[in-house]
Length: 233
Image (cartoon, rainbow, N blue to C red; front, side):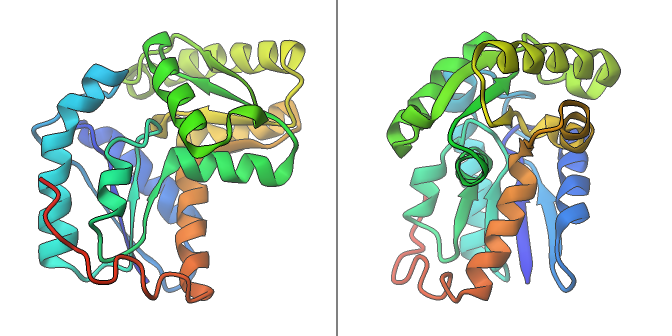
């Protein structure tokens, strides 16, 4: 199986972090290719950045998935699920967003979950996605750690402690059964934080890879995008 992982922002170092997290959980025989556009914001923080990323994301998807092909699934590695629904309806293969994947996983392991994301400007986007997916009633709260996306690359230790403090507050106030990490750049923190807090701390990158592999194993990917594959931009 060959899975394409697209980081919609243009920060190559974050793409490498995401790629490493994906490869760490991929099953035997699964190949991971991770790419990013070069003409999108360096970080996607809120609706304005998400909108600015769409043209570059759509062009890259068109070139890699629709025209070049050779992939069995595509992961959109932005927790805002940037452009996700537009890509799903035009893709010849399954397209999974790390936000939707993480929400599904959190609901499988518990009754309620909370999300810990980066900046406050991202909270309305995530809340809107939860409502659109029909998951809002299962989410205790979407919480902003106020860690900028790029700080996850440049100041990992301080960022991790700040996120941990927000998780502690969520456990005290929201009483969730699981925590969802609300940024692809947090992917390499999930295991450490799960062990620290002794409950599921879910990274959407890992879950999305597992779901893509599961869809293929169940033959649920066979007719994904059948008769579609039209241009996305």
